[in-house]
Length: 131
Length: 390
Image (tube, rainbow over all chains, first blue to last red; front, side, top):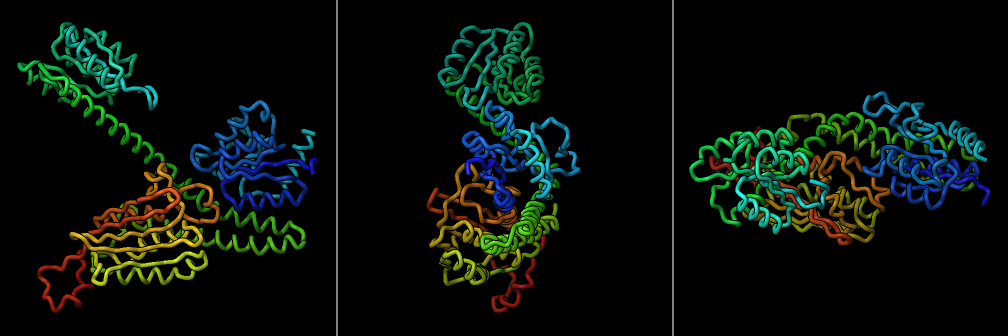
């Protein structure tokens, strides 16, 4: 049990968190779920997960960008890989997120809906790197 | 203004020493941060540095004229409220000053009360102006992001459905999966319903973009509409263990409006009251006719709406996001549509809410008035044709 890698999912869509969470649990991970940015920050500090999956467009003030900044500010969490999972990978100028831009302190970007097989592969890669 | 809790700063510019001292004393006593300067040049430096909410300036000073000071202050910040002090002989100049952008003037000599009154009034106006400016910025941002917003709203349920189906395909066929499959399929259906109502709501709004929702102005008896809606939702409410009750008067509860819109209005309010209720809770729809106004209350016994959310409740896409909202699907457009319908009918909609005890939405609309020209005996036939279209 204790050797399971721990993943925190932060997403305000309970159904999305449920589906992806169950998928990861079925693949041998321990999963925590938080349903807004504030809860995500709190849980990240408390549980110190090995990896975080973060949604971007959640309720105001506690949305993903802010949560990522907050999490990165914590010395204990500075190097925890953060994957951004968002449907905001659109071509609309307001929200264009260059997945390789690097300006947002995330490590990997996934467009929603997420290709779970790819997600699993990337998670294993990153956690393998860390181990 | 430095932060929301810092006292507002008021700058006094007057060459008269006694005037400076007494103004400062009065303003400080009122709880403001007051600073006084003896001439225009120094006053302007002070304004640039202190960023006051208000400047009180003597019009007749050696050096830089009061009029000059007004325009320079507004170059620094057009939202600073300016009050000019002037002698009786210069009322004309005071009017001139107001044309230049001063908010008001105080003729000398004035009492402390007069100063207090004008300062409070001026700062109140500033607060309102700043609030409406902020509101304007928010509106234009919202418009700009409307497309992004809508596409995100449409995509969210689709993503959830996709993800459920995708994961179901990957999971093995254990007993856990069987139970999960059933639950997830139910959730998928719920999300599809959400998507459908979002599209319906959005179309309702898009169809009338810039126009009106209320297309008809006919006599509509709410005692027919409301019980019909309650009957429709009886099974939904029973499933949630919520009781529906109507307390409507025996005689007419007639308003002048659009039958479809009124159905949408009460449909939204009643489904909300069921959705945001507690198991074992109650929804009560009451109606009264008083002084030319029909007042309908839709009350639930749910968790109530936190005060901080209430100002935004009727905004497009606004949704209360709190614990317990897990299974409540919603588009964030329902109450916005309600507000529009009620406003177009010349009425108001308000919410009263108490934490833990529930919320009541109060709709007030003008009651139907029989047209004076209609012959009494023909009223019934004439109702439907009496369409006082906009």
